[in-house]
Length: 227
Image (spheres, rainbow, N blue to C red):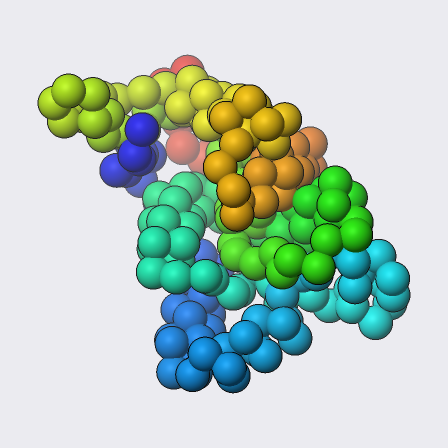
């Protein structure tokens, strides 16, 4: 299932979401400008390497943040940025810009820590924004469970279906969990980072929200079930 858009308009300009999109784009373009040798050196310096983090967490803890802005190719980059573009603005609406930025970065760090805990001796670099974006998805499901996601379903034909967010994101999470457990795993994907980011988003999102339900309804006139 490929998300196309959600059905909730942004109430204000999502400045931090656009900032994150721009920063990821700038870093990715810089990666493309490097030759293979320099690119490997750059990735090795700023990606999360579990064995290195486990050996000296104080020296390499920064990689929990820097690894979030690295990508391994066009598909990796575009798929992550597309999902952030769709879901990030609404989560930012429920948080102040500063809180959303902190939430996003902490989601990515929590995702990296869980991934590293499952492979503490690995020297394979872990990189990408998907752990942080998984946190955004967890927050979205918490805040907007009845929202609908226009979804492309390539099943025999191309079907466009509006799927409730709680179903779309719930199925996505189950797939990540099963893949992490090895039931449907594809190599080279940090499945546990997706799981860790999503769970952090579910648990922590309300700590970053500046509007509670009553105030949200008073400002918008919406009930959660209206979405």
